[in-house]
Length: 311
Ligand code: SAH
Ligand code: SF4
Image (cartoon, rainbow, N blue to C red; front, side, top):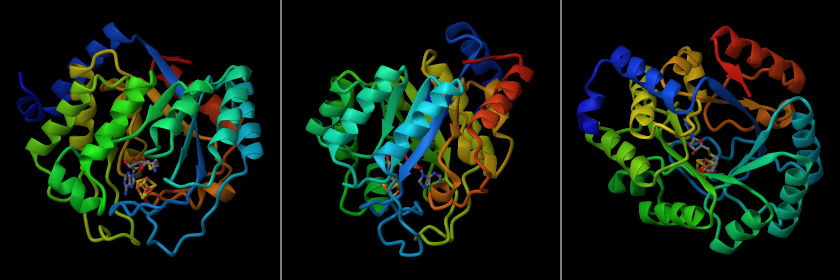
């Protein structure tokens, strides 16, 4: 069945199939990743994102490398195997110094995933050589015209080129898209899913678009829970062995944990100190206090209650 056809199917049916495939392909383990939002400085102007350069209504921060290292190691000591370092696209860190830190974290036993936007081939290579194992760069939409419209001065092919370089350097490739962008159609969603398949992504993050008041898309509606959940299920069907996090932004509009029974096998838990995280508003989100150990114990409990194995 082609992807457009799958998108027309009933959500419950898709989730049932995705759940069976997930069980057979990646099993009952749920990978818990520590997410650190290391800097909200960004040079880009993505129309949907609260961190965009033109949003002057935001206090900007960049975490010192020593603090990142300390929290990452603390996360490891609390049971996390992977830390995901995420930021706006910027030049805040010296790549050599960042690479040295990645190396120290890798030596400590952590797997490092990076999500720092489009970097040059040389920068990506330096970080890979330092031990970074995965890179997450969503293409956001595979509709060329819509991409250009949402990312003035940038093109989809630049984005996909960067993804190819990431793959060629031997990173595990993470990508994905947003559900609910304006002018989205079943055709464009099908194209998004096809691109994930063509890239044979190791990791797929599908976000539900949530409008942010200080962006040009403030007037838009949020992406639909149902469509997002369908895209997650279809991803599991077309990429059976991929790692699929539950969609964090779905937590703002519904029960994100239900995706564990609809294809997902990964969750990211925010370990960013609250004093920084409160300003990492890519979309408006409810802020909770962060206690790395307590949060870790809590998510393990939730996963066990769902008869799955936390890792
Ligand atoms: N700057 C890097 C990584 C940080 S942004 C990058 O853009 O690749 C991480 C993700 O936030 C983006 O990939 C995008 O999919 C998501 N995002 C941005 N604005 C959003 C919004 N309004 N609603 C939901 N997700 C959003
Ligand atoms: Fe910057 Fe990423 Fe937000 Fe775009 S999505 S404005 S690159 S942080």
